[in-house]
Image 1 (tube, rainbow, N blue to C red):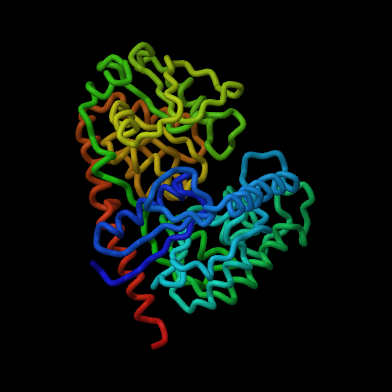
Image 2: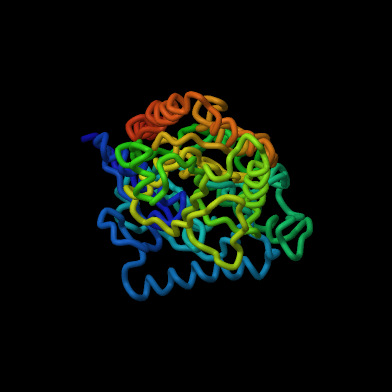
Length: 426
């Protein structure tokens, strides 16, 4: 056992990619002997290892109010687009919490939706402890948006926000930027970027460009997300063993710009028109929430799995696929890509965000040109016609074990914690 106490702060308990990444890191740290605990603002599940800040009926009611207020007030100011925007007007103080006070290091993760707004973030400076903050999206260094696309206003002081109904030099995004600037000037924290793309984005930001940054990826349970015999995995999904299975990790919506659904649809239709691709040998499998009103039409036989709550079953679904496709237009270090590779299923994706940190072109998958549906189709065709698919599959698994396994990632974080503690005034 290492004499070190870490407390992780996250709004939710595994609800979303950041929550999953937070819990996985805490488990990995505990496995190497670090005393690591997760403190959440609102708990959906019943994991006894997670400490819930909103246990009492009153605290829970207040948390629900804060969460809903943040979400719906943001919609009142933002345009009707699928890009999340946070006002961060509501919040919850944690400086008097016993776990936070006793921790040697405070590790912040995703704290929007009414949890740590700039005011309560600045309070953490009073504890005089090392603070680490993992950026699971771009919100920490923007005036409100979580996904930036091509907007470069965060290089300056935001304002003129393309997401707001009332946009101008002094709009809400600029006001939020100013509030963050004031808070950040009071509290020192070390940034962890899960991808090189995120690290570069932080360096380009006007809010945090001079902060120290460590690039450390998220991790995954390699003993859960692991390879299975593909023919047997396909039988579980009632798919013929000889079928080439294309999987996508969300229920596509025609209106969801961030997920790049239309590029997936266009790529599949182009693939179906290619003479070297026999349509009857391909089947599309999609898991995630169903949106019956916005389901696109696909050219191949499609199976919708719905939401999968058990990781063991999800791993077998990945293993049943011959290719996993993610047409995401901006993503930090998507869990679905890591999960697929861990199950020895190659990934085909656009060259964007942190995906190139995981997918190595023509080695464990295919990196298509950004927003190029034809190249996405080329990637599927490349894998479909590949004479040594097993080698690509083995490399997919090997790449995760080498760079993203729990022990590797936990030890990298431990090194950061110890360095920060050693640098503290004696």
